[in-house]
Image 1 (tube, rainbow, N blue to C red):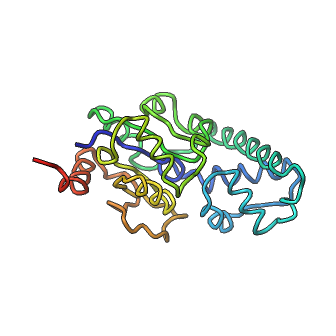
Image 2: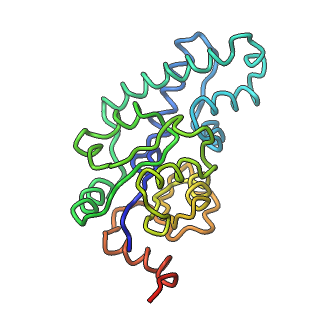
Image 3: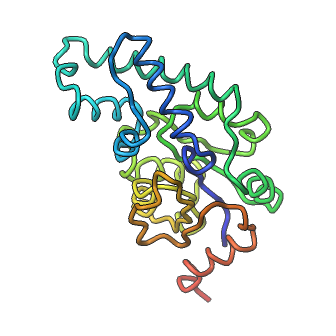
Length: 237
């Protein structure tokens, strides 16, 4: 029986990457006096790495290796990421809309008795900035930021959330938007529905339970059907 839905955040709940995180990174770089600018094309390349601090380091390895030679580089990266978070929170305050179907599905799922959780690499501050308090309150467990040391595509964050819920993977569905997210959820044994974005449209989503443009036509009944499709054959009489 389907008991819980576990959602990714960035790209899944809202299309935050292009007009949220990317300009927030650029604002943090400008404030620090760095001549870095991540345009949409470059940011698409950088998205192959999950985690903001990890993304900065990956950029430096490819395009600004001299920065990594600074004696205080780890502290500088943490400071840049902290500043980026503040700019992102400010952008969310101006309004970043949820993707089609997200809010109705969240409310319908809770009304139907399903438990909700989050498994993401973004920070808790970013989640609370994006989601209105009444929506955030719908989620029973939130795995975010540095909750686990290994970020997606490692399955650790999903394994942590499953442990917090006290549920096996077979009682849940994951909702993701990227290949790294799919690898993470599938690595934890979760059947996964993918809602791709402009940044992830060309990703390899082999192994996804369903591949959708958004959640606009998704109902709780449909999720239960997909779950039955994925796990029904494993049920014992």
